[in-house]
Structure formats: C-alpha cells, structure tokens
Length: 258
Ligand SMILES: [Zn+2]
Image 1 (cartoon, rainbow, N blue to C red):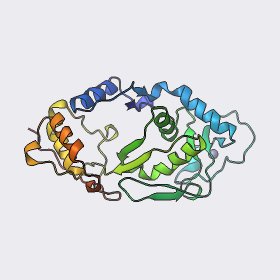
Image 2 (tube, protein in one colour):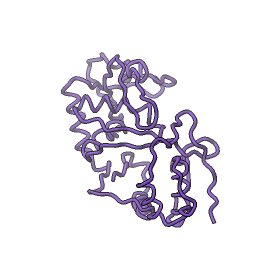
Image 3 (cartoon, rainbow, N blue to C red):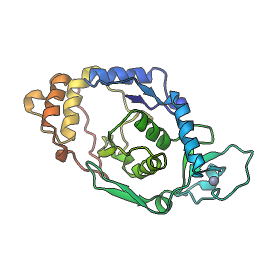
Image 4 (cartoon, rainbow, N blue to C red):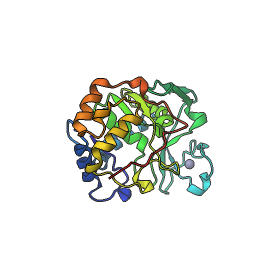
C-alpha cells in the first residue's frame, strides 16, 4: 500500500485516511506497512546521488516561459558546465535509442526517449521529486512485481524502465487498463473535482467496475456484498476480456444510485 502524497500543497488533510477506509470498505486489504511518499525523501535523494555518480544528471535553469509550447526538452542546459546560483531543476540525460516494454493488456510499446521525450526532470526547482523517480524507487523498495494502472500512464512507462536500468532495479510487469472518464472526457480524479465514493456505494460500484473490466459477473452477484463479488472474480478472472483501449477510454456511465 502506497499513498502518493508527493505533492504536499495538493494533498488535503485527512484525504489519505479516507482512501484507506474506502479501500477497506471495498474489501481491498494490504500487507506490509504503508509507504507514504512524503516520508521517502532520503530514498529519492539516494537515487539521485546514484545517478549523479554516473554523470547522468544536470541542473536546468530554464523558465517555464522559455520552454512553453515545447513538449520535448531541447537540451538547453545539457552542456552548460558553469555552476549557477539560481535554483535549478535536475534533469536526466536520456539515450538516443528505442526503449520499450511488454504490456499485459495493451500491445508492447517502445519509444526513443531522446526523440520523443527529451531529458526529463527528476527533481523540480522547488525541490519536489518527480513522479517518475518516486514510483521507480518505491516500486523497488516495496518489492512490487506487477503494476496494473490507468492507460494514461502507458506512454510514460519507458521513462520508468530507463530509470530502473540506470539504478539497476528490476522492471516489474506492467498492465494498463482503460480509464473511467466523465462526460467531458476527463478522468475521474480529485483534480477534476470528481466526488469521492462512499462505502454504501460499494456493492453497486464493484459490479460496474467488474463489468467495465470485461468480466462476466453472474446476475445473482450484481450488487452482492463486495467480498462475495471479489471472491467470485478471483476465481473467474479472464485477463483476455479486459478491454485494450488506449485512445478511446471506456465512457463513464452515470451510476443508477438509490
Ligand atoms: Zn534547461
């Protein structure tokens, strides 16, 4: 279990407790202690130091306005050796070669990080660590072998695979599932002000989630207690039925709540 509270200004007090209680109410339990990214600074600094030793990092002082509209970092600061007094972000030098991974649900994906992404940020100017670095360090530390997550992260995976190679960490198996989106096409998240789910919605939402994931939940289990639905799905799970949507996420259907 990990709470990805890496961005303290955006984390609301009490939000993580609510998430944990909700997961519990939905019949999802975890082993081991909870990893809070906000308490992982030392591990992230250690990873940065390892990359620094390999001469893979450099400070970047580009302003947002200098980079605006550029989706691929042009490498302005890459060969600037003069140390700067200015606050700087830290970027990693990416190789000019194809790097890919197999996905459990979507097709294999590869890309050339230098041509398609550019040297990316591992630590921001304000000191916050980038998601890419944090998850790679945490996945290894928590011994994660399989990562099933939203397809919005599919194309970010080669960056993580690259960091795993640089840090000599194992690469987990990845599987990307469709997002549930609202009727304007945004994913349901607190950023988009989606409502929190409550324990009382558990049975119905569990049935809907299983159906959206392509599982043939028997009619008599529709809306049954979550523990019963989960017990059934563990036995009957058909990975090949999980929709392989990337460009076209499954549209969100309004739940017929009582
Ligand atoms: Zn720069």
